[in-house]
Length: 287
Image (tube, rainbow, N blue to C red; front, side, top):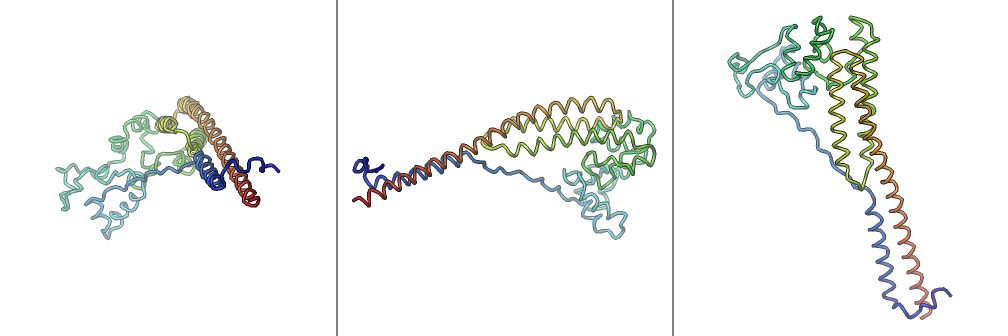
């Protein structure tokens, strides 16, 4: 019967050890082809300063509520506090924190809004000034973006309710659609890269970082409100994202193939373990 021809050639203790080794080696080799988790760093909160400490405790809601609005804004997320826009000295705990000698600027006049925000957002400010909105002087940055509860730049800011206060929504709707399609394509690529395991993703992450930068450039250009220009730039970025996505899809397919091979290797070594076990058992019964 089958195994009896080999009886006596392999010691029984050795077959037991082989059975154990087959199982361990197979599991180790097979599961080495499976994914490992990676961690992501969170955003560090901004530092609190004397402006915030003072204003958030004031009884006058006109002065305290802006702190609450700011705390939920993109400015708070990236660490830009009151003095980043309004000037002053956040380390000074007295009223001198709001003195002109400490660079306090206060609230800008309506016509100064674009240049006020342009201290940091130079390119967007310039694009806005070159647009029909900028030439007219209305609406200003804060009409769309707010003054304290400032949202991260994105297509959600383009709103029919806001736009139709002054004009038809047809052009803004087209602009919004261009940005939405581009953002959705980028988001899908960014989500897909997380499915890659067992292959280096640094080159792809570098490409995605560049794609994100290009996407933001289109968003900045959108402040010109020149649909044809935005469309041209969007198509260029879309092509680059597509190229990155194709490489991501290729590596995802390889990842899935590696998983299949991993399962197969585990099954093969489990089979060898079972065969070795029964061979050992048969020898023991014959002895």
